[in-house]
Length: 313
Image (cartoon, rainbow, N blue to C red):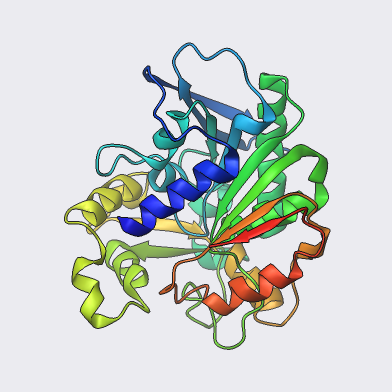
């Protein structure tokens, strides 16, 4: 909880939010936003204080998830009395999340309904960036603003970072939580080797093991508050229409990001150049993250040559 509290307080300062909770209830609206591909719609959720009528770039935020799990159970699952999304909304922010195609409540590409081995990896980073672009354009038009803040987690940092290099004029500030950069050895935890099919199937046990990889043995017992992982797993594995019918439950995740890691990050080639980011940036990292180790954060920070200012936490 100490790390979470510190992160939230830094975010408050970074975005210029009041440290005092705003009065009033929070309202939620859900949308299905057309993507740039016919037949593919993106699930977008919005939360803000009830009665909020004025919107600005400085107080608008869009979140995108990582490579395996959808946005709503990472960003808007109530744990300890509130969710991350609601906490920020309670400060007078207009907060949004988006599920990329193939994740959560967004349209699942037809390849996800076929045997995985019949198709190559789907939903690669360039496709994900286009989905974020569709969501951003929708938000800007709906709120009549010209830019927004962006927050990406894990693979989401690559998506938001690359999107920003191509659309600096639409971004106010950028937060990258566990930024991805060139891998110095080995493969990401999502890559089990061998030929890559269209998608992978993960279990609740897989998720727990990935969470705890890299955590010292003496810290594992108390790392996650009692019941939190189980609540997250119940909500997350319910988002896959096929997976929730399995026993035990399973979840399908597109393999596009794993293919990108093989061709780019593990091969020593970046998907994009951080020097092309020209907005303020905050990088956040957890010390026991085995999938995106600390050296990636430090190296990435040096590459932000043209950000007006940058923060590393």
